[in-house]
Image (cartoon, rainbow, N blue to C red; front, side):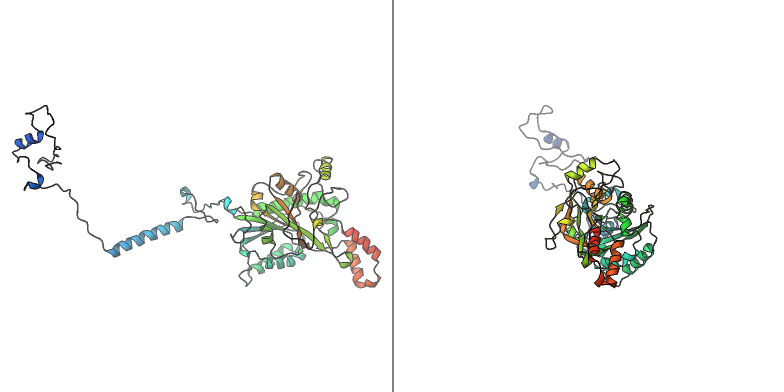
Length: 438
């Protein structure tokens, strides 16, 4: 150990050298001994026996101990500062924090689309649903439509409503606004919906909305292409980054389970549709398959498509196009399991639940001939082409409003006024005419 902490000139003392080391300078004595002789210091003795020896202790300034209350106050201030910092940082609607390099941009919104992929228990994870409804001369159906809205069991605040009103000559838009105002101002706190959009866009649709004009074969191709445009305009204007699901619903649905959104969602499919039927008067059979646009592809239809022009559109249920496809509607069993699934290629548009990621990936409603189909049927084929699941539920039934054709309406009036004299042979013929699919 060092025998001396420092020399008077402030330089540190050399370390003790061993006595057996051979030095090449001086008298051969240790440098420590020479230094002591030079400075007239005591000869070597042990430090602990040297009364003049004082060990060197570095200077340390004395610190005053803060009171405990002051320490607690400082810790509280630091904690509040950290909390304020975290609260001031922007967060996305999915709850994820913004990247550190962008936290100070107040107008920036960050969305992680992996968090809105859509799951089978969306109501528990608070997944938002965008409900889209195209409307045209739909004023007579709106009160019935809003009665369904009131009864949906999926949390209303998680459903955003979007309507596209086009080419209407009645009070569709005015009545829609009135009914929405009443819905949103309902005293029941569970009734108001989330964000609501009313979009007006005319497409020059000239086909009348009566049943015979709307479903006549000659009008099908052009009508469905315009309907596809309407759906695409509505979707592109209303879809937000925080939507997990898109539910397409027609306004003229008469009877439907209130739990339909949850029922379809539980299957966790990319695209899923129920079976659509319609009621008929008893003398016309009581009920009838309505939507034949949900089907599986057939070899006959594929061969037929190869013979058609590039812009041709195959429509189901017409003698002009015999496709022999298996239709979802015809596989219904009233007592069957409503959860049974059937893979589809084409889908109808009365009631479609699809994950929002399907549309974000590029699937849409073709307003042109896509594989010889348009609108919802082409939507189904495009989704299949992009490897999304497209499913129908043959035993889960939604009932469409019955709108009699002109001939059937006349028979019904005759039946009401003179039920005893109705010509049942003519009525049977009328029944056959009413079975033309939609």
